[in-house]
Image 1 (cartoon, rainbow, N blue to C red):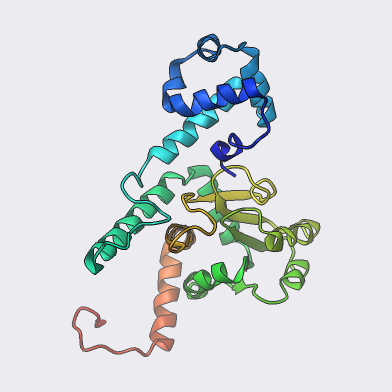
Image 2 (image 1 turned 90 degrees about the vertical axis):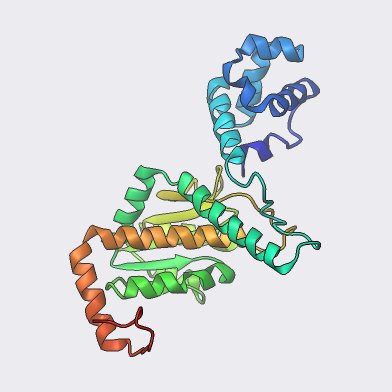
Length: 289
């Protein structure tokens, strides 16, 4: 859950709520404000800020302030002109629809890249590279997005399984040589969460692709990469940004694994493709030497 969503929950007193509402009004303008200045503006005591921070599971006001400002900066970036939930309207003609959806895809890639932490990405690539077997656990509509990733990884000799059926047994039959890739936009899926005890019991490294903010899956994964977090659960035309963000991260993971042994992977992929890929084309651009 995003911090800004947690701050809207009904867990604050009337005085605390006044401070929270002030933070939402001022947003990035609280950057240079002191605790005393915020307290004076809200007719409260500076200690109120610390109490709010503790209710939101932060050690103090400074940590809450930094996290709040970082999230506001993220929410301000990109998507300023297009609503991820309703990227086009009933009044748009077909070309307007096409252009808006294309623009949304471009924004999603930029947004996903902006969330990519270098250390987490490096660790994720290492986990996948070192694994003898990669198992992907997610709900069915996310697994449908993973077939291309599985195909590309298989073409460089990496064994990938999409655990659509008997996921509990797949988790229980894994070990430390397996890497479990958990994909959940909400990070709160009961289906995926239910597999974690089996994975932990078997010492299986877990890599999560999930939304921004702390959630149940990211708190237990060994490494987490963040998905674009712009969509509501149901009130939307389609899962454009979440799906595109998953695709983008999977492509980045494949590219990262490929780059760890570039020459070997390229030689193996070309050899396999020459032997088993029998497609033909009269288009000169597509023709091989």
